[in-house]
Image (cartoon, rainbow, N blue to C red):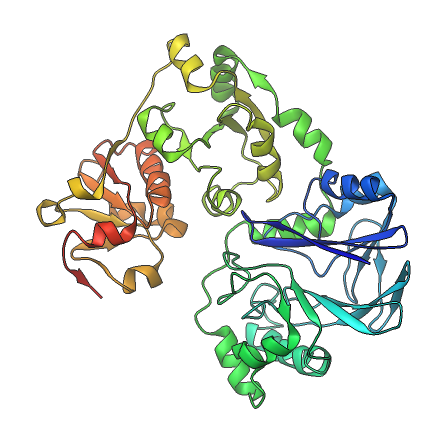
Length: 458
């Protein structure tokens, strides 16, 4: 028996490859089918099933491409309606995989079709549960993503989740391994652990939502309080996962195309394309194509694209580090941005040699930052981070809602921008620059170093 968690840090997402006696199943695959096909080829396995725990909101699943490439059957739980062929399983239904059995446990709450898959070994002994977004390590799935105006509320869904956990999951043996779809960093929950697996028994003892004597009313209140608005791209990803999407191969063929500086400029003007610069923040601030936006690959790249680029059909041109072009196109496709049109061959140096205009962002370290002599400071951390300690007189404009909040700012004023590490502040500074704010100073340091420069308000 093989159980492999394939974890993708950018999305804090866990997919799973399970195999027995030459037959394999994949749970919640990402967009590219190749990692799963490679595992099957190496082991001599045939991928028989692709199990989806629910209609994902935070990424575009790879079930359709993987099914086309492998011939595997796509399986959803009860109530899942799609525009493509799939098998809608019944609650309690068993699927044979070599000597293993995978049992369907319908666990609505996060969404109505949410399903947990229980793995039984060759003796019929429960060994693991693949919980999707129903149960995380330290948390449970947020119940507000599938609410329906005039019908279901988040409180209704939270009540269903309470029932699913207590009637289906908490009755299972303590020694089961819990394999969730996400860990810390995902927007699908509030308090997820950085651990990506645990025993069910330990979760019963430590997860606030599984308290033994917790009432339904307490559960609904605690699970629904403090929920931030879901990222804007979530609803579109759900639609794509239900209706289908363009093949991954076509997306890559269109997006991973080399463009000379002349071609790059011509396409940018003709298509009104967004120039997305994904290099390191240190390289970006030293020189970038005017009006381009920075979202670095070496950060929470895909979720920030989803937060800050509202139109998934937006044509995108890329500036990348050498050798990371295809990676960038693939990571965009994971959250439904399938309209990349190519990348700048030779990068920013080729652009300079071409005679293209280059902009910069003034960037300083904390030891050169004097908040007491600075009139306007923008802190782009989350509100909870800001409340935990911030520079006096600083204005909190969280990056997730930054574009909408920019109307509060004066383009002729000098602003100092900071966050926790310099990643988010560089994104914010690039947005300000693209909107005509020329007097921007980016403070790149750990937040502790910045806050140490003066006393704080907490």
